[in-house]
Length: 117
Length: 117
DNA sequence: ATCAAAGATTGATATCCGTCGATATAAGGA
DNA sequence: TCCTTATATCGACGGATATCAATCTTTGAT
Image (cartoon, rainbow over all chains, first blue to last red; front, side, top):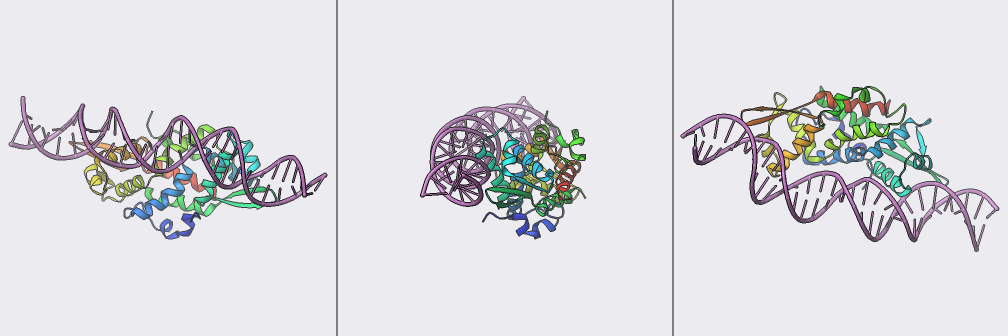
């Protein structure tokens, strides 16, 4: 119900929906979900923080320290990114680590790129 | 004040902000603007409708007909896309035509693609 | 068993945003 | 000039969302 929408529906990203023929209502709604997750300054910084970490993985404890926002707020943003399929989550002991889902981002990238051809 | 943010700040898109090093607050806010414009099902369909038109140009009158939404609502969405730099506007007589700004979309596309490298 | 720390969840609040009806503006035609 | 049509703007309403404090859950340590 809240898994990666882009990964679960590769047909949408592999086609060229923005150029050849207009998007259907369903396609537009599916694509809007990860874009909405991305369209927030805090979540963009979170994503870039995770992506720029040494091993592509970041502990929530470190992410919390990087912002002047409450812990629940960061937790909320991470949840939004995770449910949109942009971040993967793995728990080790008490700590939770997030890493970027490259496939999802790549799908969005090629989707937008199709328009410029 | 409301021109294309990506085109006016190519440094942001040409660098690799999402991978190498975390985005600054200013960069994140600048990138969030066009992404917010894009992160709506109606606006995605509007953009794809314009992009898929024969000569890459679409009259507002045709766009209005394609949606079961009021004329002011479509006008609002077109304004958001235009102010985000994703659509260009040209008036001929009584009619207004929109066309996709490929540079802006390409900038966003490469920006997201940088993460997957 | 108890405690402390990490992270998620809940409930509340304030702001943002999508939508509409009504109205304004602008351009062409009679 | 007056009317009609195309598009934009305004003001209002309702739903979504970003944020916080408080609380809960889970895990490891003592």
